[in-house]
Image (cartoon, rainbow, N blue to C red):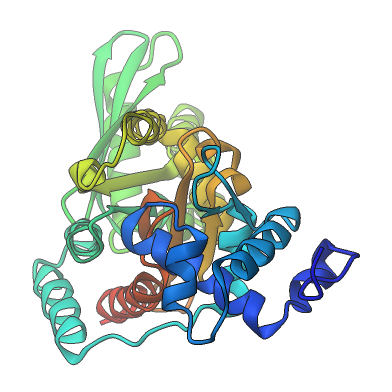
Amino acid sequence: MSEDVPVNAGQAGLAQLSDRSREIFRQIVESYLATGEPVGSRNLSRIIPMTLSAASVRNVMADLEQLGLVYAPHTSAGRLPTELGLRFFVDALMQVGDLTDNDRRQIEAQVAAAGTLKSVDAVLTEASGLLSGLTRAAGVVMATKFNTRLKHIEFVRLEPARALVVLVSEDGQVENRVLHLPPGLPPSVLTEATNFLNSRIRGRTLAEARSELERGLEAERAKLDELTQKIVADGLASWSGGEREERRLIVRGQAHLLEDLHALEDLERVRLLFDDLEAKRGVADLLGRAEQAESMRIFIGSENKLFSLSGSSTIVAPYRDGQGRIVGVLGVIGPTRLNYARIIPMVDYTAKVVSKVLTG
């Protein structure tokens, strides 16, 4: 082992890399992010800003490999960064870039244009597609239906023991739930329940409507008969089963993941990522972890079980509603060879613009 790397390698060792070890490691990572290819000692000795022989570079590369920061994909090949190496690079060595004025204008203009449609869904779909186009990765947004504002609710009888509860939100989304009815329920009960709910839910989120209706039921208990009270409560409960079930996932631009593939194993990783994206519950659970954070989250490769096979990275940031509450996350999913320095500020700025538009 050379003098560049302490004998006790661990996390303390990462912080104590010498300048030349850091520089060689930086060049390995940046070459990988640019080309996807391993880089050898001879090429490194030519491009690093210091005079070192290829043999000296090989010694440093061997030390970096012992630390778990790089690996050789094939015998006598160059080195690639490991997932640990990428995490170390992103956390400790990478200089995050700034957006160009053109990038800022494009993000603001496209998100604001979607906002003129008065549709939250249009804003989020535009943001997902925009990020995909700018980053050449898959754009993702996770939103909570819990926070959409309601316009109308309707009970539609399907058969004697079942009814459809139809909920319409202000941004035009329509969703249904099947409700089981008590035996012998007269049609007037569904009409009365519909009128009672519509007089109280308009313009409110589901959580706000629930609180209002609970108060309303207490106040109107004497006027509403027992069956109507039950239908109102059951109809509301069918929409308030829990925030986890009320997440919706928007994914745009998966085709970008097929660009710039270097080998059959790249194609296999993308196929596995497509499978992951199809399993939307798993993606929603992953993004839900990010939703608990106040700031941007970066998941690299097997740091999350969902993408452990496809070796993908996720960069996401939360966005907020008019009350400053986090109501979802947006970002990108792609190969670990993402341009982190460019994408991180892009995701962060898009989340801020979406928050601003939703507030407005």
